[in-house]
Length: 232
Image (cartoon, helix red, strand yellow):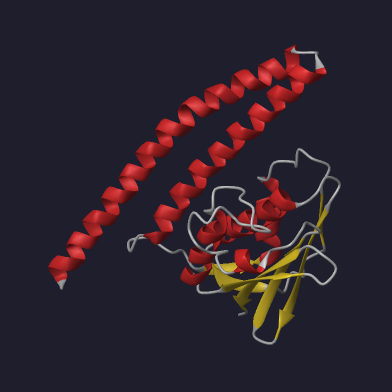
């Protein structure tokens, strides 16, 4: 048993090291491209050219995000991940998430209802912020222009619920069967978007804490994602 455990630990370390190396090799040129794209966007005046540059910048940012998500996914999947459990105010986690969140490029509003200070959970602050960020980013990705994303929270017996809702197209039945599958490409209405790693990572994080996630369609259109934490 100890021998097998040792082999597993070495394998986890090898996977982690490999992923870190690949992410570094990806991020370095992408950051350089992003810098040049930003310079070009300030220089160019032709609307059509600016639109092309904007599209390139969007794709570069998505690739950088993929790099970050794949690294986080690998880290939390390893047996040696050091979970840092502490008392966390949900309001603090939301503030930290939004502080590091890029302003939506499209005209989409993120409306966050005030989160009561007494909503406290036992969790890893870094992972909670990552999970909230993934869910909001997912809502942004499928929201229409001038859409609204609403975030609210409330206690429910011994649980604390954080809800993120959007007014996008919602999920097809086929999509809902594979929402948390790795590389499912975030199916929505049987079309393919994204990288299929965001919700899979969120699910692994919440299983680790342990907490849970639910995703439903809203009656009048759009989807709602619930992060369900244990209250303390």
